Image 1 (tube, rainbow, N blue to C red):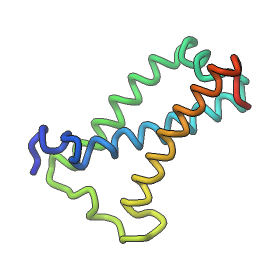
Image 2: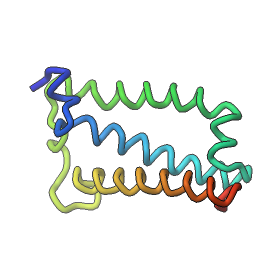
Image 3: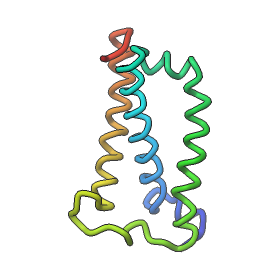
Image 4: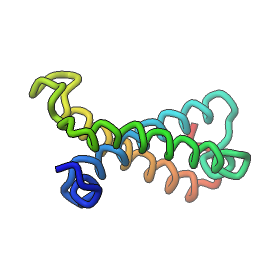
Length: 115
């Protein structure tokens, strides 16, 4: 189905994929900024990161949703069990979601950057 409610449903093809892609980008960016500037996640957000978060979220969400609205299956371009498979993307996204939350919580507890 190409209906918005079906695509964005809890068990639909978009919700977890879009969140996972954003989490992978966010986690990688947060660690990279920590390594290069020494800023923790909360400092990154306060010093202009929120603006970039909103722009990136809109861009990645639209780019992820356009093919689904055109009827392209989320699993149509990958081979099962491969390194670049649809399942690998879901698991990497899940790991990035957990990693980003763990990074924020750890930095909150320690009061500074993880790295």
